[in-house]
Image 1 (cartoon, rainbow over the protein chains, first blue to last red):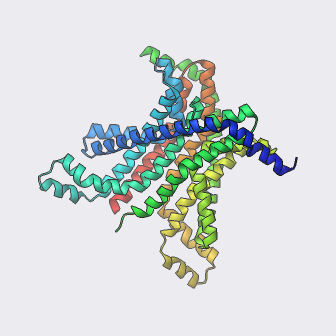
Image 2 (image 1 turned 120 degrees about the horizontal axis):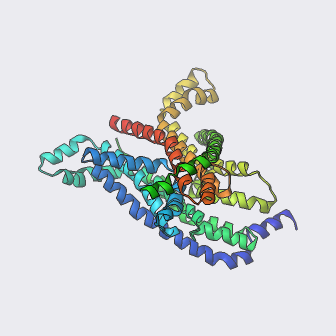
Image 3 (image 1 turned 135 degrees about the vertical axis):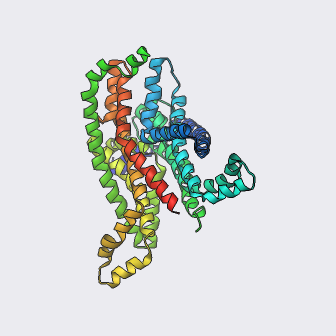
Length: 226
Length: 223
């Protein structure tokens, strides 16, 4: 066998691909579902925390800052390991899916809170003052005047952050969650062939290239015009 | 409460495992000291190539950057670590991890540096060239220093991400902090090593995260 033949045999093997594409497709569904669940829970939670912080009630703000700091400082894989391997010691067992989802949601919420908060700070204070002098309450001024502007500022950094954290779904393979990477590597070791890994890689590209493209577009589209 | 301490912060267990965890921390620091500078250099090289403004080259660079940003780093690592033996290439573990990190982190750092270089006004380059500097000198002494200062928060933030990312080396059993903590937890059947590792990561990275918040809010307040 020549080098090229050998490469094709181990990496682009049609027989192996035919046997394993289905399990990769199942992994694709799990990854997509998990990624969506993380975004749908993490971003609103971050927005809520940033909004609460804008009331500037000392103890509450301090708690929010501590939360955001901890989950920005801890590696996401560390958080998954804590939830999955440490919590069972106090009879709080959870599935691999729940552990990965909860960990990534907390991490995304922490980053989203910081991004939204920076957005709120970037909106001139006069906006809220004007809203209040028109008779709106703080939360009305926040929801109707400040947040719409803050969210716009927050979109580009938030998109990139959300993509980075959603890619963390691959970390679920460490706790044997049957997402793409896990399906691909168990397929590879079962068949003694790297083709399932290539299929997995392809699945990730199909899933994430559009988002990376959207991130690039959002950076120019929502750039703050000054 | 007593049982909680027994399970999560057991002094006896701490005594048994702290040396092992410290070894792991040493590996985490060593790995960070290798992959952060490599990623910075690679990223800077990408950004400087991009700044040459050759159209076809830029397409290639953007394809490279977007390709490796779309790939979860763990997938890249597994692909390299378990894929290379099929090509009959035998790479030492540390080198395989370093290579996977380089592909990923240089793309991210490259984007940051590119934004930084674009933020330096054109006149700076013109002035440097007209005062007799070569293009290379102008880049190195005039543009890059200003670009770096402009994107310092992003560079620090990215570096924090890279250090956090070193935990994925545990997947290929490189004996870094998380790997050792997991092993110690399995051996002692106690969660203390995991909690300890988390505290070490917090102690290491919390100051950087705080610094970042300060830098970001300061720049937001200036606008």
